Length: 176
Image (tube, rainbow, N blue to C red; front, side, top):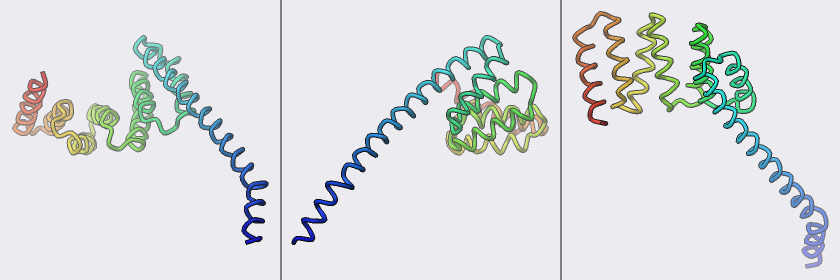
């Protein structure tokens, strides 16, 4: 019994105050991280405005800051890809979009833009791979169906292309 009391006293005098201090520091660190992420989101909004205004240099500087702040932000890689496409740096755009896909494999934005870019780069099989992954998640995604039809057109398979493009149109009209 004396050992139990002694252990409790040691715990109260040494370990408990240390854990309380650590808990407070953890909370401060968490608050600082939340504030940093809030600023990152605000900076991402500014980046989108810069892209829409055609200020690609400024947008690139801002998106690099967002990625530095939050390197797992798939949306940041999507917008980086958009900037690079507009700057005609398709190789870097592919890398950025692939990184976005890696960060959020179930998100369709990066995959669709990557598929469109691969199709433009005359790599229809690689585009189709991305499109099929989108359709596995969202089977009625009209943009993915449209792009799939365009892939079949690029491969000179007009019958399959027309069938898929009709499906794309009917899916799009059903939404509206």
